[in-house]
Amino acid sequence: MSEKTILVWFRNDLRVHDNEILFEATRKADKVLPVYIFDPFYFKTTELGLLKTGNIRARFLLESVADLRHNLQSLGGELIVKTGNPAEIIPLLAQQYQVSEVYHHREVAFEETRISEDVEAALWKIKLNLKHFIGHTLYHKEDLPFPIKDIPDSFAVFKKKVERDSEVRPCIETPDHINIPEITDAGNIPTLVELGLTEVVDDQRADFHYQGGEATGLQQLTQYILNSGQTTTKGPRYASRLSAWISLGCLSMRWVYREVTQGSHNSNSPLVLELLWRDYFRFMFKKHGKQFFSSEEITDVTSAQDELFEQWKSGTTGVPYIDASMHQLNATGYMDNYNRQIVAGFLINELKVNWTKGAAYFEEKLIDYSPASNMGNWAFVAGINNDPRDSRYFVGTKQVAELDTQSQFISTWQPIFEDGDSLSPVVPI
Image (tube, one colour):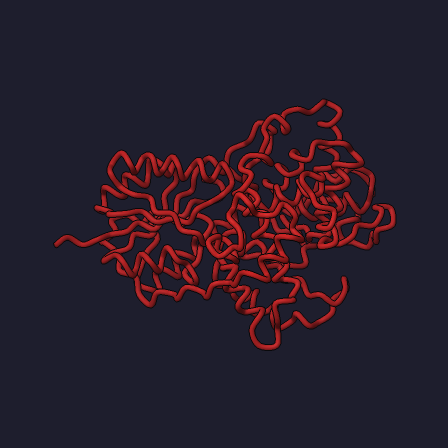
């Protein structure tokens, strides 16, 4: 009797804890073949002249894949790493290692689902099945009090009904051992340069350093729980900074929920509300499909919009708070949610630039980019399909001119380079 081998295709689920595809594969197969593929599609330059993945987010991804490989190795496994088209690579690996089935977590954004469909079609040609699992949400879609097509478009209604009628499932246990076939070439994790990107130079003004991977994500979660009762210069709430690890699946949303709601903590934690927003945007994209990804909207711009967009991108609008926020984003890959709402509103309402261009720029720059959350937030600020009651769940924005301008990123902007030199300021602020 031949052994059964299941190929586990990792994408945005770079962890071994609460990972259903990994656990189910170890339970149902004799051997497991973990695979991660760096798809050149995600490192190309778009028609807007923007990178789909900037170097700061790409570095975080590389670190996360390296940590996943380490964690799999600690369980007796290995991670095969390849670069190329998944629809070509996965069938080849399946044939090479005599794979019986391929597991992966289902995505919702149309680019990600198209890639899944291409892989599924390629596997079908060699009579293999691509099995879909749901592992990116806090609430499982089967446990929602309504079918996807009937999910309320209002977050307020969605929140009320889900919290009243649904429960968060318990976490999946972590495998204690992984059996793998004999792997002839596990492959190397590419460098930023090999992905067509420049090396990252960390800005000295950054007040937080992101390092990718499940291990550091779990450490940050522990730190958040320890400090969540403390006050900060921005108020009583201690920012979790967990979004980057959640977006890549280095942290499971259910695991985060379990940790922050046990003991002295409860389901009223601000972090639980943020997790629920992530679910809401993801389910909205499952319900509405391409509605918020209209390429016609992105390309329908004027030269005047182009100039204003460039000023916004580079932080040269002349409005100190806006410019400082963009400087921070460009230098660190991060901007808190409060500032994201402000700079998005400024681009849309003051500069009259199409909101989808701002969303595309955030895709390149944000270290915690997630398609549904990013486009959902931008659509929210743009006033698309919003219920007025939803606005009370976001921090109310002041007039930009009234905002505090005490920020390290408001001082004269001088990008710092590896050799210690710097450019002249783009504009005095």
